[in-house]
Length: 111
Picture 1 (cartoon, rainbow, N blue to C red):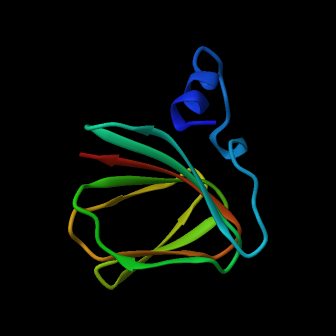
Picture 2: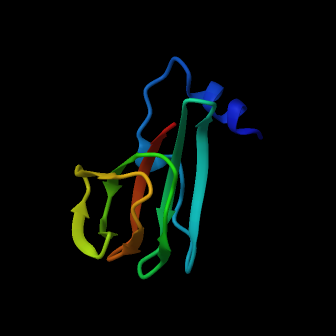
Picture 3: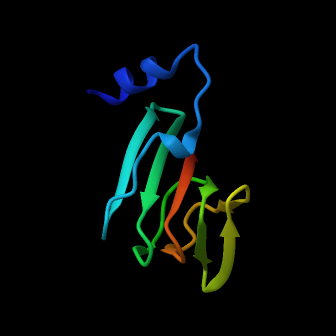
């Protein structure tokens, strides 16, 4: 199923972001809901201990934790972010994501 088809299935009905993906042992899984010229919206599920290593992105992004706890590092500063909390990842700033526990996040990248 394409990302567009996945999004269309959700249209017109309420849904819980944290229920869009299941956790997988020893893995990070993702599903892109929107990918167009102005925005990308992706849901991620991290198993405990999984990590996205330090990287940069050319656009600002808003990371919303919808389940569990993550440690977010932005330009060497560490932040613990829990379900219900959000953090901005500034464009061109190095950042990393570590799963303190199993956690799910909703990432909106604004182009």
